[in-house]
Length: 191
Image (cartoon, rainbow, N blue to C red):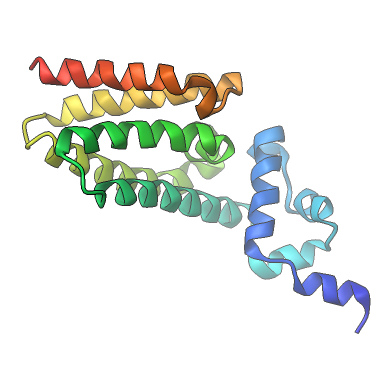
């Protein structure tokens, strides 16, 4: 067996997805080809097509994997033995921490605007938001409206989007994140 064949066997979907994510973030979805991804990896483009049908399929797998990570974060928090208010605070902070810890994931999930991939970004965000909304609704004792939950989500999303663009990490803005979340919680409790 030649050394090249041995290296090709090590190529995984995860390695391809990580490289593609970085190229999509750096150059934009529309300016990245499967050939560019394979070149960045040092493999033939055929090796990439073995794992993914096309660029849109690769992007969709990225979106699915990234939303799975976000959903897992929510599930882990919901399984903690905390009172509802503390758990709600953890849910909000967990969302911010996820977005700022996984900035390239967050950009792929929420911020890339390209017609070709718009359909890839429909189902996963909706399902993930529904999980978020159900968690918030239950933690608020079923005393909030869907509009209020959406407003909370938009406030968290705006915070993450702002600091993603600045390149700051969660640790850089932890105290601001806590202040922001406490502000949202105070506004809810005044209802």
